[in-house]
Length: 385
Ligand SMILES: Cc1cc2nc3c(=O)[nH]c(=O)nc-3n(C[C@H](O)[C@H](O)[C@H](O)COP(=O)(O)OP(=O)(O)OC[C@H]3O[C@@H](n4cnc5c(N)ncnc54)[C@H](O)[C@@H]3O)c2cc1C
Image: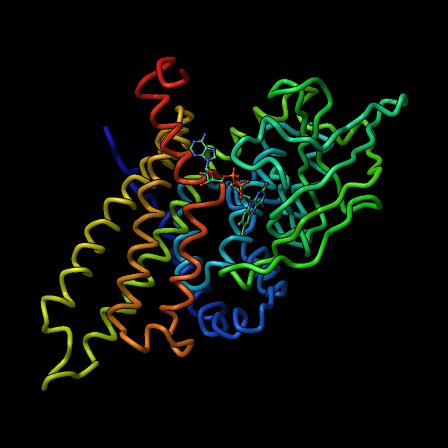
């Protein structure tokens, strides 16, 4: 049964902290950062100072020691202010931190987690390659034993969030034969041989860094291996299982911002002798989106509750992301339509939300991949053909 967690005082505090920070430090500047394609690294560091970059990192490693529900509540608030910043927050709290928290040695945790939690170091997670996205098990980057216990990595990564500003990289490369079992995970600081490319041009998310990485004879010690040889794909996928719940929260933030903007605009905008809010043609799409946002948020919180209870959450996360990302895309569309010509103008956030929303249907597994995860749970082996 789908069930949201009962929110504790700690949950409400982290939600309020994120909401206040987003209102004061993010929302007023989001339009400008996006117009200038500027990644506000100083704001990311401030988020670290107030404990929002290592929300679920244990306190002994410098984090806030909270749970995944807290990550998601904070995520919705930050995303409602700026999707690009929230993407950096998602990677820092989840994709970069979680593999180390869950699989790192004591030495790796001590070395990397305090900097990630404080955002003195920015993290990146490099799984995708130019020829391997949804089919991550086919990745081609190689890690060859150097004969001294270490590894030499060669290959290319694509679409790496935070890649242009990162100090710590979780990387996936092939140490064995073909397929999932040949993949291992590594964690390394920025190093010679790990070369970020130029910022990639993209539809939205203009306040987020996204680059390709070239790995040219990147030499790593044996202490860089994360979780044991051949464990890479398991680590990558378990990280994404939780990450998808976080992206559902991001999508809820986008949808909420879109609905709030459209309601407030429609209440003021005059046409045919009164506010356009009096027309059912304007009201109903927003009423519909409001109901679907509540449903998406419940799915998201349900997934977070399962994760926090230590229960399987992969399918719940896939459902939450599938539903919430569609709600974000459609709510942003409704917002543009409600604002009419002004919806198309850079003067209002509707057009930015419209461009940003689409990413939630693509990264951390496309909507087709979420359907595949759900279908496999429904059909079992019969779904694999
Ligand atoms: C802005 C941005 C930031 C990103 N950040 C990161 C990051 O930080 N780290 C990282 O590792 N990656 C990152 N990604 C990569 C992202 O996760 C991938 O783009 C995504 O997983 C899809 O992979 P692909 O682009 O190779 O598409 P493909 O896998 O080539 O898919 C193309 C199309 O085919 C469909 N398809 C593929 N296989 C199937 C199937 N079996 N059944 C049905 N349909 C299928 C897909 O759904 C999609 O519609 C980012 C991407 C973007 C755009």
